[in-house]
Length: 131
Image 1 (cartoon, helix red, strand yellow):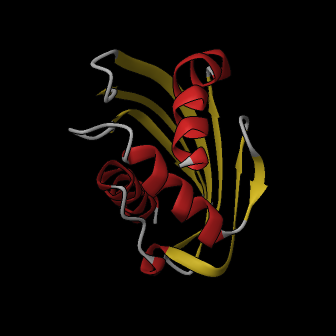
Image 2 (spheres, helix red, strand yellow; image 1 turned 135 degrees about the vertical axis):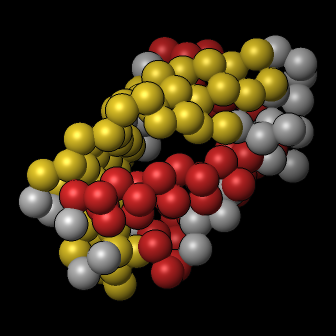
């Protein structure tokens, strides 16, 4: 089961890098939490991922540095890198924790350096949302 959970989480990061988190990855009642925006439901998280990816012309790419799985839990140390539309480089480190149920992701908690998000991402998101 741990290998299956590892692969599910790797599939999540591949989809996150594409900005396309399909419903098939998740349970119907999946919940998301990030240290920059708190709790959200699936549709809001998916829309946020698409909006975030729109700020990176060549994409924001996530790379898995390590995975640890036990029972229904997976912890992932991850790095994210990309070039913003301004040409400025963005790089952040993350820890994601997942709960898996029935071969699908039931919860995601995302922790990152929120200072980088506040300084580099939020001003661009605010500008896009005013349009």
